[in-house]
Length: 303
Image (cartoon, rainbow, N blue to C red; front, side, top):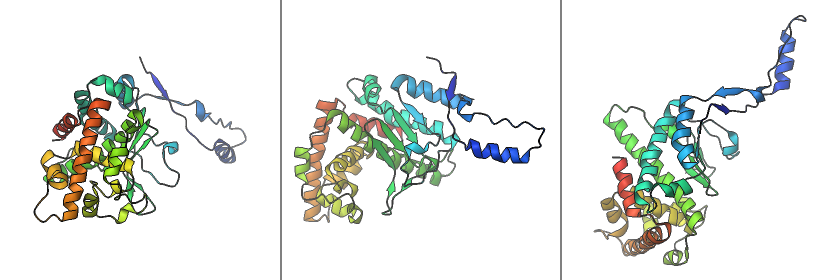
């Protein structure tokens, strides 16, 4: 399928402009105000790349131009820098699409069905009233919002910049895999009964998790404080941390008792291990994706 032009609708206060221009013109001069709703912009090389790499194979639009309907009106957003869009798109291909293509029993066909219809790129994070930051969202299984892309450093020169990018990729794609976990849940109907019972006494509430420490979260059987907010977030956090955390680090931090661990921490790690097995089994049998292979491919892609 060919794409020659992209229709982009722009809102301008036409009446205001017409009055302003007529007041500045002489009586003999005719002022013509264009109907900007009929304006057409040529598709750029970037647009064609995104069309061919995402829209054609996955029926997914990568939206990088600021459109306010995608933003919560209570929040302020920064658009993605133009030069950052293609590198981020390439990262999405290597750190998200390729690992799933390898790990899914159905190969490339899996994401052709379940890849979100829209991926929104925002330049900065979204700040919340409670002091927290939203790094990503998933909406109705059809849209993922990927924030803070402007922080990624193009062509890092120093070790500090290289390390920053590695940390940024881990954080950003941990968020992305978290949000995709919600799409997986919505698409395959994760049965949370047994999962939720394991840490039934450890959940807090959507607003109070910010006062929970990492140590307290682990003692409750969750990998992060955010996971204590509700069962769905517990599942998504565990899902994303399994994929994005090196195996030795995951085992030492969340599974294997360490010298100095309290009894509560050891009990919490036992809970995390039990829930991990449920997630792994669910992914293998229901979703038909080997989550450990997914982890290995993701980690290999970001080395």
